[in-house]
Length: 273
Image 1: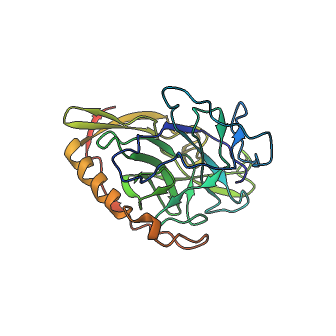
Image 2: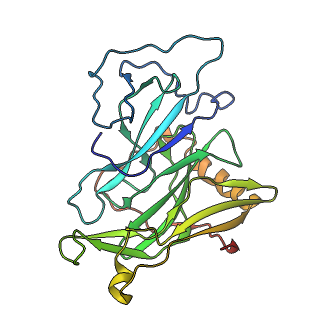
């Protein structure tokens, strides 16, 4: 799709059986390409010979990979989004990259620097995504859900964040970039009646705000937050219901304004610091 950098997120897709075929990733395609050491968004369907999955007694896992998409590196706001590719043969061949669809949050409307996706811990037939969202003067950690790994629900605000900034050069000159100072840590953990979320606050090199104010950067800190499992069950159910008919929902257009008055599902209890 376009240039990318930053962290990748890899997830083994849930079994699509029992979901009326929603989100099945095993449809045939003529656009498989052999995987390089690091899947490249610039790889075109014509590069390399198409390779058919090896037949075996047990089907290989369906994998989906996510990366940041730099749609417009020179854009102050809205130039970074999310793209995805998938493999139906356990990573031997990969489909062409394509943008994800986040309901009510079209490309070029906000910046998303990292997109963590995993099996939903309270509904293993679906996926849960955590990602830092920034649109000055606001920033937050968003949470969204999906069945197919391409269409995600409109996000809710899991945790408000501080909007940070940095310039192109360390001497505070050059174009300014607005960034979320917090990132989610990969891995949402379910423990009996609670679900644990880990947030990395004051991520290194994301912001020069505190350095400009105090002469030194903020101290990075990983914090564990807890949510009642029943609360995440309710949130997940609501979000998944909103995309149950996603195939008939109008697609977002690039350049539209995002709905930043996000529903809130806060993490009130600080468990570990």
